[in-house]
Amino acid sequence: MEEKIISKQNLVKLCADIIGGGHILIAPGKTEYVVTQDASQIVLDTQSKPTKASYKTFVFPKAEPVLYYKRGKNDVQILDAGPEQKKTVIIGAKPCDTNSFNILSKVFNWDYKDDFYNYRVKNFIVIGMMCEFSDRYCFCTSVGSSPVSEKGSDIFLIPLDADNFAVRIVTDKGKEFIDAYSKYLTDGNPSKSKEVSEKVKHPEVAFDSKQVHDWLAKNFEHPKWDGVGDMCLSCAQCAFVCPVCHCFDIVDEDYSYTEGRRMKNWDGCQFGHFTLHASGHNPRDIQGKRYRQRVNHKFKYYVDKFGEILCTGCGRCSRGCAVSIDIKEIVANCKD
Ligand code: SF4
Ligand code: SF4
Image (cartoon, rainbow, N blue to C red; front, side, top):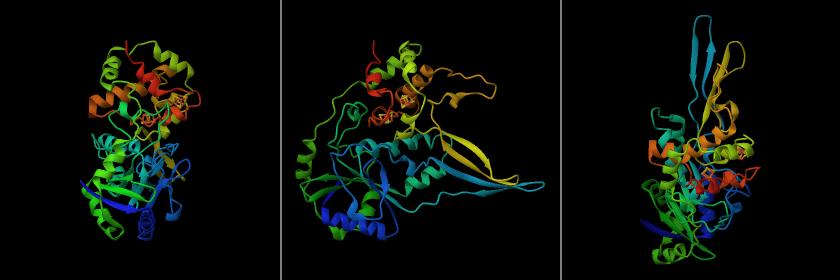
């Protein structure tokens, strides 16, 4: 792995060049990842709290048209709605976000290849950054990651001192990208960046994910799900902020009698109508069954199907839950 150094001043210039080159640049804002037009306003702070929502919306938008249609007298005309997006660069992403595309790509390339998602990911550069934030909700170390994990990053930043970052080039895509800005980089000092990253405090491991998986396999009817169900408001905030929740619904929206569009909209398994059949039957008719699905999908079904845990341990779902349902605590108690 190649490593370089960039000064903070040059990083601002590099970001200005990215924007000037017509690319979309995303950086952590006060509460959300935001598209930025002013490189001098970007704050890269390893101690900042994770944003309230992840950046999955930039590759998997909350709502997007997948086709347009026009009805004629005897036929229907279909018009493509291809994804239109310039090259997008995210800078300062936390390790609990950077691995999200690796996890999501499995489901978006399973029996059906989602061209909208794939196109955007292909044109996305992920510049991750070491994380020094930790609160009671963080558990990246319980799901195979860490605050210094480079998984999913094309380039990874480590602050060496008040004025400089180490720039680890993780993927070929990252190398091709950063080579265009080589005038801003100087030779790296891997032993110094190693020393810094080794000092980062890791969140305590809260559970063994293999044991959780096996417990879930044996405890589908466990009464604990009713207890969580009694508290849960069914709001699906937890799914919408999650970097790897990916349920969506397809809806045809008519503009008029003759024209309309087919939309792909986020959905969430915590909503009561998520599994409601046209007959009126609902196989997940109470909230306990819906929360059980959330945990099983993340820690059992996705693991069985794709070999990945459908959770990065970011803690967002718990931090934002109005009734303090804490997924880390629930999963850590999936044991006899
Ligand atoms: S955010 Fe909390 S209350 Fe809302 S659906 Fe998720 S667990 Fe339930
Ligand atoms: S389930 Fe919760 S902790 Fe896990 S990735 Fe999603 S938001 Fe983060």
